[in-house]
Amino acid sequence: MENIEEIRNAVAEALEERGFSNTHFLGEIRSGERDDGPFMTGAIAWNRRLMQKGRVR
Image (cartoon, rainbow, N blue to C red; front, side):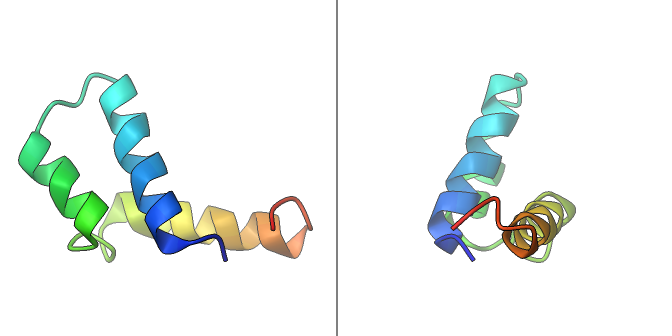
């Protein structure tokens, strides 16, 4: 799996790009406090799938 911090930052950045501005929530994503939430669960699952297909390191 990619470095979990990279996934957390990618999720937070994607939310910011879509206009999400709750900085407290974004900070929780970046710090790992939201790893069991739907955004991170989906990102981790998608990363795992891409790894299985050899599309990520």
